[in-house]
Figure 1 (spheres, rainbow, N blue to C red):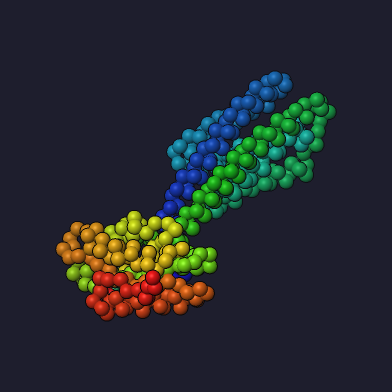
Figure 2: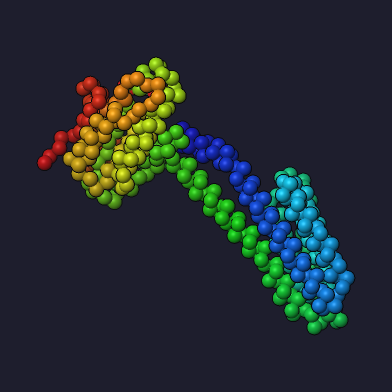
Length: 353
Ligand SMILES: Nc1nc2c(ncn2[C@@H]2O[C@H](COP(=O)(O)OP(=O)(O)OP(=O)(O)O)[C@@H](O)[C@H]2O)c(=O)[nH]1
């Protein structure tokens, strides 16, 4: 049940963040547009130098198409922009390959275009498939039917192929790098969301458990404590659930300040918090908790709440090789003792000095 909640919370948070991903797509698209415009300006000069003026003219039309695509992206007309790019790249690559042959390497531009169409779908399945088809179909036809080379252009093939190979690789690398950045960013985000309690920003129970297990396996002695806000139901009933939430947030801020790494605090559930103290003696942890117990009513101040907020604490030191669930059950009994003894206190297993 807790696992399902974690996943649905992470999914909802990801959905809330999806507009950032859309921004990333728009940035990628604009980078590709600029890259395409610059490349085609280069081609105008290249074809004039090698005395192929009509191919230079084709590139003037391409430059206009890329400039329109830049404007469409600025206007957030991404679908039209992508369709225009698909049309430009496929028709241009086809014209140049049919005229000069496959050995000139103009068909290579279809590959980064395929990647672009897959990474930045045109926000609509039909449009995406049309774009992909506009790229893949000419690629297939050219490889099947276009001439490999033509005798009149033999001297041009090596420099043209190298030039096209490099230029077609640039958008390929840019797109791949951006996709990787977006992926890493999203993975980090999802991990953070899956491990953090949304209300308080503390570790959630799952992350707390993981950390506790790793501490118990790696370091000795390890102490754990459970804290529970006293009469929290009354706070909710008297001041409302929102004020109750504010109490949890305010308390968590203090816990973040006072429980410093490698010690950690996590929201165990509701108004309960688990503290993990690796490489800490029971006496040391008890001292810190007694101070915290007295500090909380002084420091947890929430607008609209005219009574002190106090907590009760249970504390134990984990025995070597003790199963975690057993240690949790033990610390829980000390928390209940603290509640039964009047609350606002720390109850711990006996400290041997
Ligand atoms: N505002 C708010 N209340 C919560 C949240 N999670 C749990 N609670 C409330 O916490 C209250 C816990 O009440 P009880 O378990 O009866 O304990 P208590 O009133 O604190 O009494 P003692 O623990 O015996 O001192 C319930 O009213 C829950 O609804 C939360 O995220 N926000």
